[in-house]
Image (cartoon, rainbow, N blue to C red):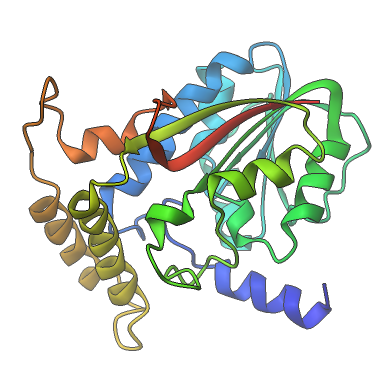
Length: 276
């Protein structure tokens, strides 16, 4: 990656939403989904040395420490402001935060027992190299917990991701193909599963988030927090409770769940537990 490309990536992600910076995310669901994913990861980290890739402001790193009872947790991010906030907010003898990018990790080989990488790989310019770096720093018997949006549902028919921060999105088979290069043992989980015919629900997911990103990146509104709060109203109006067969959870709650894959269905978000 050229220096210019790296600088562009850092600048683009320096103010990235979804809980990476305090009080910036306009979608409650994004932050809640991330928290639930970290809670899911806590079962794998007790007494382990853990790396949290794209840690943002550090709330997930903090959960891995306090709820997961990890031996040591390092959170890394390419946003200076996010790392600065994390260092100020979460101070613990077991936690450290470092400004760096996932495709060039400054760690020795085979150091971490567990690496957590939630919704990161789709932001990288070289996903294969990113996975190589994760594999390099994970111990031979170590675990990678990784997630990425399912392109089939997330971007619908678009050739390129509608999310301005995403470089590459994957169909499940594509994601499996690159994971298997470095991690021969893979267990698949997912965040809210859909059958291929649930198009109206999928569009509702996408439309709500598209509204959010359009507002966030509007040239007038991008520098102001207040307009972003309007998105919460959009969100709450769109994600109303819906009654479905044997399931009265609303869409919001379903998005936060982490479940095994269901036959003949695919998850909105692919979550994989990988072992070397």
